[in-house]
Structures are given as structure tokens and as C-alpha cells.
Length: 460
Image 1 (cartoon, helix red, strand yellow):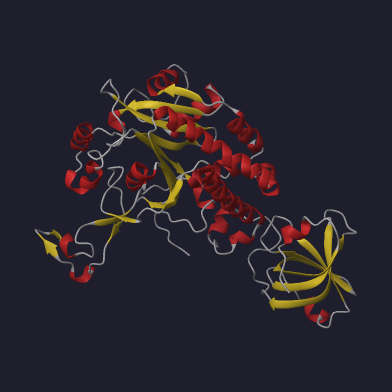
Image 2 (tube, rainbow, N blue to C red; image 1 turned 30 degrees about the vertical axis):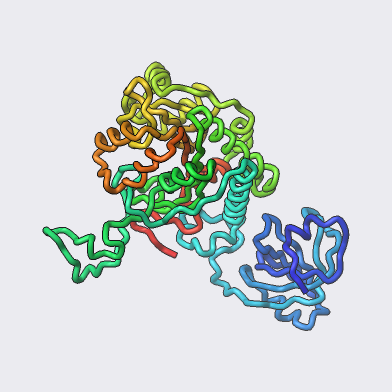
């Protein structure tokens, strides 16, 4: 007999015989002749109630069930006589797959996020984290559907790379060299003896590779893990995280901003419709303003604001910021949230940043001072998307690489793409974990990643 997911049973419109569910016990209540067993299989927030009576051959064993135990139940689905649930199952067979000990750490009580991070292998069994990771799954699906409906092609870009997209140098080195007998040349590790014959790192972005395919397939996107060796123990940073990175040929900055706004709105609306119960949990217990915030983000026309004007607004705000803001300085989260939560009270797209604070590949504007960059800022988070129109002019690109100290030899293929049929093109990166934080109201990135990688921590 094929098992049925609990969320399917709870959507049933008629009773049924011989249904099979498998899951984990959340709670039990016993009487002399029958037991109520609440079972959850992870498919939805709700449990299903099992009525097991003393006609079962193993009823004495059923009465020993504990929270966390795994069971398989066969029985009849019928309308519940109790309050709080529409359906229940009267068991004609209940097999105990495994019996959890009394020391099972997830008992029926509230647990702190800090405690649950220490048992990240078990926390998906809680209501909060089960809901968070179902939402993560549904957001992933919505993003893929968003791009497929717009005729984008999905691209798998390299995890290991010999180039640094951002020019930041905060990379994880990948090597097969024996550290006990490290080959050296002029006092430094000899990269020529390494696996690839040169230094290699985990990627911080799939952008450069995606650009090459945009110049062949038109519109592409990559959606995968990226890595940054920043020693930042903050609520917003992790060493391993996922990025959504579209690249569009024949697209200028204006088109880039339009797509970014649409990409924020579509998956949020999808999750609101498809994950009503899970979103409802976060709206009740995590962020009381969550639904109002999400409605604002999906219903608003986003403000388009030049960086120079954003700086002036911040300077004239009379608000005391922890970080000073002047033209030529990057905006901090406090500045971004002031613009979205206090000044405009809606999402804002800031564009035309000073070239001195942006990477080499962003297209130089005619003023020779700013580049065609844009950041999407949203209430509650700040920056959630960063992107630009890319520099398609070979000589300008070479000049920018020289200014930022990047060796042309490592990027010969990237430069060559500007010689063969170059066109205006644009793209951006969406931090997927920050997106989940926005949708759920969760305030720590460690709580939206199954097993977070942060400085000093690589458990699980």
C-alpha cells in the first residue's frame, strides 16, 4: 500500500478506508481502552490524530509510544469528533518503526533558537523549522518557475574557480597539496604543483560564467551555493550561502531594475498563496507585522533613487546613525532600512553608485565618476539584491581592472568576450537566505540554512 502525505489527507473532501500514513509521534494521550496519537510526517504544519484502541494486537506496546517515535498507521479516515481538526484516522494497524527514548530533546515545549542550533540535525522536526524549510523549498520552486516562464535557461556554474568575481580577496582556498610537505617557490606555496596548476578557490559568484552564456543563449540564470571567507559573526552573514544570479543580453540598467522588482514580488506572492499555514505561524509567533510588510513589498511600485540623492536624504534626516554617510561611502544596513522603513516606507532601488565602491565589471557612466549599479532595498532587511549593467567596452573594462589591481591574465577569457560580438548586458545577485529571512520574519541567517557554516562552527 502506498503511503499518503498528511497534507493530502487534510485536503480530502470525503472519508476513505485503508489509508496509510508514516511519521513521527508528537504527543500521546492514553485511557484504559484507547489512545490518541498525534502524528506528523513533515509534509505540513498540522498533525493528524490517530485513534488506537485496545482491539489492536500490539495495544500494550502502542501505549508505550513516546514523543519522537516513528510509526506506520493503516486505518480509516473519518471526520473528527473533536475540535481543532477536520479529519482523524481510526487505526486498524499501528506498527512501531522505532521507539524514541525519554531523553529525546524535543519535548512539548518552546525551545530557544540558540538551543536548537546545537541540535540542527533535529530542529526540522519542530513546527517553526519545519515551516521555514518548507517555505525555503517552495521559494526555490517559485524562483525556477519565474525564470522558466520568462524563457530563461538554467545554468550550472563552477564551484571551484581561478578568478575572484568581486575582487575582495575573501576566498576559501581549494588545494590538494600536502601541508606537511608543502612545495614552495621563493618562500611561498608553489601553486604550479597544485591540482589545477594554479591557485584555486571556492566561488563567490557564478556571474562571470553566466555572462558568457548570456552572450550566447540570451537570458540565463544560475542558482547555487557560493562561499565567502569573511570572519563576520553577524545575523546576516554565513560562509556558505545560496545566490540567484540572472544575466540578460541586450538589457540595460532600467531593464535590470524591472526584472529585480518582479523577482522579489512573484515568489513572495506564490508562497503567500501556497504556504498559508506556514506563513501564518511566522505571522503569529515571529513577526506580528509580517503580512503587512509582505503586502507592502508585493503591492508597491518601488522607488528609483540615484545614490547621490539617497546620500542627501540620509544627511538631511537628522537621524543619528552609527556610521557616517558621505558621497563615496557605501551605505550600511541602518541607512538602507531608514530609507525603506522611515523615509519612503516601501522598497527602494538605489542606482548609479560611485565607481570607487563597486567592482570592476560594472559599466562606467558618462560622468566617469559613477557606474550603472543598482541595489534593491526592502523593509526589515535592507539590501537584498545587488547588480549592474556590465561593462561591455573592452578598453574601459581593461582600464577598470588596472585601477582595481586585477591581473588581466586571469581574466583573458572574460576580456575576449568583449572582442567577439559584445552587446549591452545586465544582471544581479539575490541572496537567497536573506530572501527567506524577509519572507518569514526570521532575523538570523543561521536559522534559514539547514546546517549553517559560520566562523568557528562547522558542526553537522
